[in-house]
Image (tube, rainbow, N blue to C red):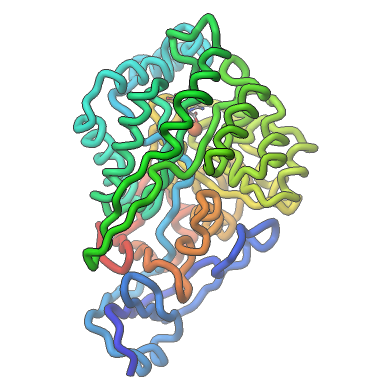
Length: 429
Ligand code: NIG
Ligand code: FE
């Protein structure tokens, strides 16, 4: 018999998208593997095999048994778009918005992102990490085992470096895997208000050449260690009153020359042409897509760039218009879902909440929702061959739900149906 570390037994239904080298497009987003009375064999934090319980019990000798107690098991969620590293809160602005002020008006008046920038610039690394850790813990309790985090509340070289440090140290210390994105172009900082192009110059000439080459030492469980880059992606908030398409192109082309992969915030409030730019530049993902027109959606659907919808953002702003996900998937697009976790538009750590919104306001089926928070979300952060599916070779990141039907994750809302969370085969919650 083959010896393994862990055998997960007594799974009512194991539900996962198939292992996929690329993001799943169109109709294939609905194709899930559903196995009753299945078992998962794990060794060294990876899945060795998934199969019928009886066969797996006769094939493997395991040091440890995890009893799923007749519940459903799904892959750990990947949250591919968050701004989770910040300090403070903006409850007063939330009240102003309820009273009628718009998000962009508050931002133009020096609040919004800029008020979080002020608080985050002043804060020490320890405080930033402590506040962020409480959010990571809450994300993990709701099933997120891998997340992307953007910088963007520093907007100056030293404070952006501090955020890259925070993300990388938390990646080492916290069981969740983190992917770091440099979002120096999140807003025009107050000191550049009169000359936004000078800020773009600064991002390109001073920030990217430093930040793209920050390196960190990673220590493996067996004690070996290696060095890796601290930042994997560069993103730009391409939106009216923030960065236009020309400025966005300049920053992203420069980031690419420094070896970073690309992401974009587009069409959250106004369509600007950012989606076409993302496809042209071969971005890994393009996010928000609330106002994107049909022509650009088609272009995206026929590309390898993953579209990321963030339904917590319109919901958080009290808007009623959402990303046209149904049309996009029917055109053959590959869609992922994310929380956009941030203190302004969407302070929500829960991926199941995003699924609940996506089904109701974006017409997505539970199967499409599950694909969108697992394998497609993993591809949106460049990790689709490591995480996002329960299949041999993938990391053993899985959730034991407090139900025997995975669709309850989408059907029921406002409560947490994630019972147990395993990261690399080890209980994390
Ligand atoms: O994705 N769009 C830009 N950034 C965030 C909001 C950030 C904030 O308000 O602090 C978003 O909605
Ligand atoms: Fe965002």
